[in-house]
Amino acid sequence: MPLNAKEDATRQIDHLPDQATLNDIMYELYVKQKIEGGIKAIEEGRTVPHDQIKARIMARHKSP
Image 1 (cartoon, rainbow, N blue to C red):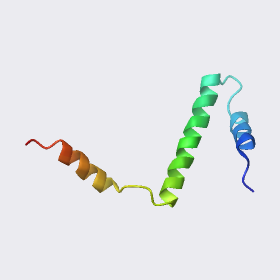
Image 2 (cartoon, one colour):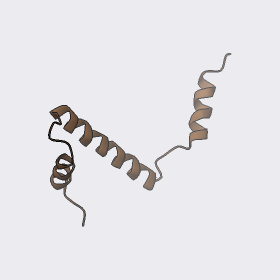
Image 3 (spheres, rainbow, N blue to C red):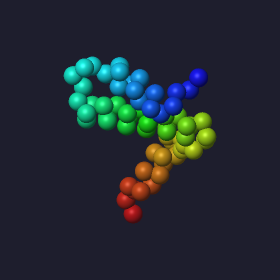
């Protein structure tokens, strides 16, 4: 069963060492949120293949 946000955050914080700072806690929660957002984007098909991104970057940096 999926946890609610508070339960999920509490579980994640409980896995950190006792010496963790507030910045450590905030960073861990931020990274988890970003990873979950990326997974959701993949599942929803909201991604761009690597070769297309590479082509866009190369096109921007071509000499005229």
